[in-house]
Image (cartoon, rainbow, N blue to C red; front, side, top):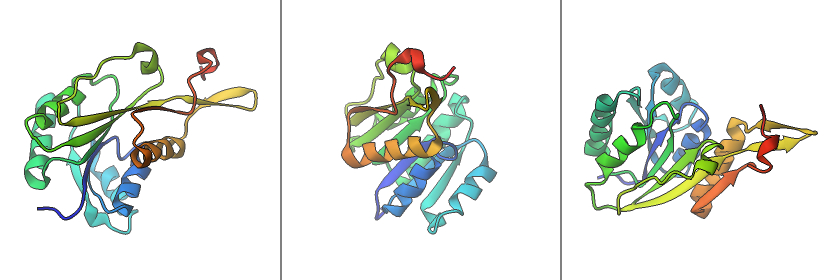
Length: 184
């Protein structure tokens, strides 16, 4: 049995890297789903507690391999307390695959579903298991100096960390309005 909360992060070697470090600094053990083991190893060794990271190296486009890796992590570490998901739209089956692996467990857990700005206007319904507390984070843009730009990785990480701390059910990091001002 583990002695600290367990987080599972998809996108943790990219724009959510700082979120992974923050989680470890706040006493979490973190499994990071990654496609590049070297990138994961570099990321974890930036932290003062690299042993609190576990790699799940797999391309989440490969449903069968993804199921296997998620099951291996659950068998080794248990059901995560927190899942943070940033999955590209090119892998629409990845999150449902992960959710399917978690729905058989009774232990409650929380999902922070990080989505791109255009999904705000689509408002898809993500079906989650009964034991899941669902939180949605939309990534917007920043209007400044007469123009606009996309969010930086630090701005994204700060927004996700704020959601973890304050438990917002749905939030926008940056802005989505006016949509016509988004970066082109």
